[in-house]
Amino acid sequence: MQDSLTQPSFLLAAILSLILGEGVLCFLIIRLFHKSKLIAKRQNTLFQGNGAKSLENVILKQSDDMALMDKEIQELFEISNRIHRLAQKSIHKVGVVRFNPFKEVGSNQSFAIALLDSRNSGTIISSLHTREGSRVYAKPIEHGDSKLFPLTEEERQAIALAAKQQPAHP
Image (cartoon, rainbow, N blue to C red):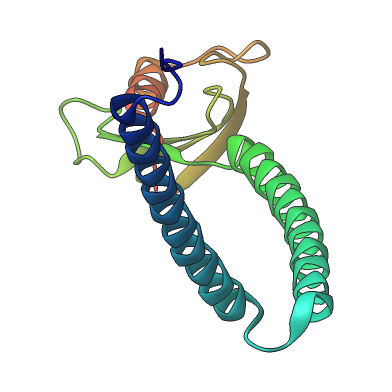
């Protein structure tokens, strides 16, 4: 009686399995060789013949440049904040009302000009024109009103005109 390991069909199956296994291994070796060539090509492109030392220098220089740019951006941000605070205090709302204080005589040569900042604070300048001359008055304005001096109707109109204006946005 023959041993089952020595039967021709078993030997044939074992040989075919080994051949198939070797074929798979050859395929994997060829694939790994191809990937190795691609990696080597990418590495040559990356280093461009200069080696890892120059790549390290490039990365360090980029890091230094980034730190410098971060510092400059922070300085620009601080400058922008200072300009913004200054702009809030500047006059950028103006209201003008011309009027005639003497209804029957003369024309609209008198005026009130409101000059306000973003909080509707600033000053109002009024000029009353009469036959004898002109008189000019200035009153401080805080949040749309004068705390120290009474306002005329025309001055209130000028303040209301100025207060309605929206600040210009760039």
